[in-house]
Length: 383
Ligand SMILES: [Zn+2]
Image 1 (cartoon, helix red, strand yellow):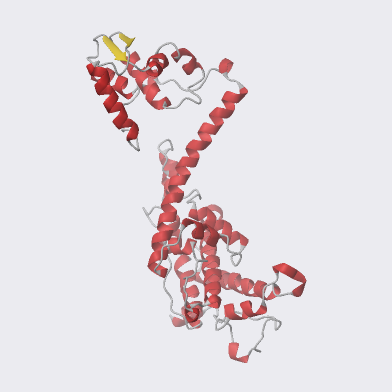
Image 2 (cartoon, helix red, strand yellow):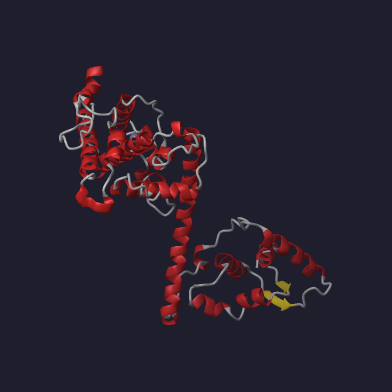
């Protein structure tokens, strides 16, 4: 079919053209089967854009195009040469970008209603879904790549895809955080470049940009790590302070190792393992990014881009983290049976992160009112 297209494209516009081919498929598709194919809108036909392009070129040409079937592999010079080229082409991973435009008047779309059967309609829907799926898979693949790169930088090892997806389902993450990380790993939220579809109006395309940072594409990486609206920077500062309060070293995570925040470094050496730290990390990082995202959505969707005060941001963060701490305590309750958390796990997780910890009993779980050790206004106080 590509050879037919090339022959037509290379032919003088008004000259007659006879195409000799051993392909009954190509000849029949362009001649006796064409009427039916156009009636059903090419539904279920493979190579449909190539066929449509070829048909349009035939109709566009001023001369007469005819086809002659020849026996293949029979010493016909043109046929042998075409055979070699076709073989090469079939081995290519991607088709050539033909980059030939179809004139608007020759572009036939849709199917005749009278020819549509239920099974054809189903086929059409499936085709359409497959196209979107392929599009999303590319975004997912790109994101998984980013996750692997960032995790490698942070932990010194490249996680398999399977480990990444499993980490997103980690039960230490709240249900909302799991959903958020899963959506982000698929790059599925309608932000940033999602608004740059060619058929969108200029007004819609402008939604790809951050309302706050002039000209910046508002993708999740921007929202979580680069946006200058009050929110992300303050939340990271609070998260860092809480982390450092436990005596551990902070390394700023980026979108990739944020998505995989529940992954921990694998190590044979027991001393190097820090299950309490790993659990605290995945809880505070996942809750913090989910809050950054939530604040962004409230600002953009509900509050007409009114920014939050630093005070409000830090209060919201404290409320979220303290609620998680309280939930952890509640989850040690015997009545939860199998879902119950071990007290030891909770004690290890929050060790070093609590307010007035030296005055708390060794097992503070039943004490009630225990809070993380960061005051709401520390930020301004430190100036
Ligand atoms: Zn921004």
